[in-house]
Length: 448
Ligand code: URA
Image 1: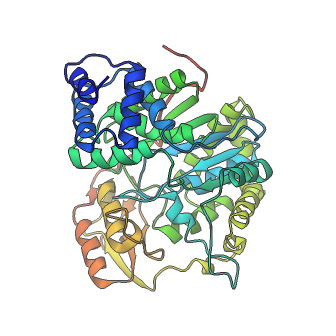
Image 2 (image 1 turned 90 degrees about the vertical axis):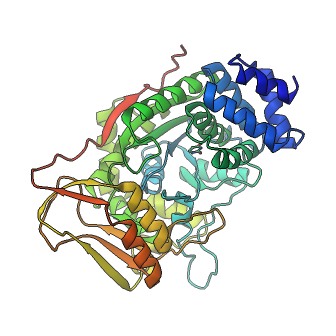
Image 3 (image 1 turned 180 degrees about the horizontal axis):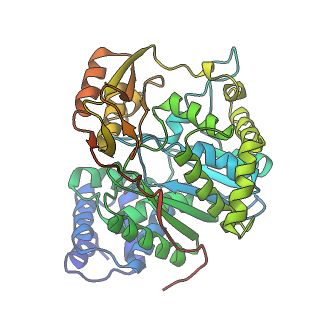
């Protein structure tokens, strides 16, 4: 079918065959279909939707558009986790070694920060190398190194190769400038094509909902989760989705080195309670998918034990050392220094912390230098926001709610301005929001 016919059929609400979607995507990647036709098709798909068969065909076509990791040499059921993106979300750094310590092989392919959300690779890249070495944590392993490390240590966290799902690179850039990002089928195909190309057998999806998430309402998050689960069924990959809270930053720190330090606190058996609780819950589901433990309560007990007995921390150190980082960071936070300059955002009245505009907190951290406005920006590893109060906490007038760690006065001022209306205090007591709102799917194939 000619590209223009593919556009016309979607414009007219016809259903496209898998073969037509496949050749359209191939044409986009090879360059025989120009970007203006790809953009027109995206708008037609955005306005008229794609059914589950079309979304599955789009996911497959994108997944096979470039390099794919072959992890068949790793014994057992490999399980990866994906988060739809949030503020202070450092779960992957804790989760990969924690699940590995409980017998789950974890091949994790992660991304970088963009906009208000952080990225796991930026956090890991703040880990220095052993003394005298110029380089630090290396997220770029070959497919063979990736599979070997997961087989030997139990986990690896790496970045995408240049030719990893090139169809998504092209389509995402077009969606960004044509107002076609917020489409559940297009988001599903974008996320799952990258996850499936990364080679794991099963996936736990952390679908964030709330003021700092892509999906602002639980209804939108549920629709995305349902769609992902159904596409998993059609492509033959097991998926469980957890709808989790992003109405406030996750944990006590936002910022790259600071989040590595906070992750180590949790791996040492301490750290923020909500962060630990969410990580253990996701890891328990990973154990279930891997067949390491089907009883979620038993799984949680083993995972809690591995946070306390040092097994999860030991996996983390091994992973860091294997990828060129200095494992001594796990014992000496001074190897991950934060900025000297600090600025408190204080409460202007007493009350209960009722709400964060979490998006604004993410933007403030980006403006300090912890994130990127565009993909080519560089990040400052030492800047951070410390979160002293969580929703439901009592606050006295004048008490610090957030502390900004900064290197540049103008950036500090811009971050402070972004936070102008980001915190709401109320007189009446406020209940903390539930951490996990819903679980969608049980990991078994249930195609419908
Ligand atoms: N994350 C992705 O990878 N793709 C989208 O379309 C949205 C979020």
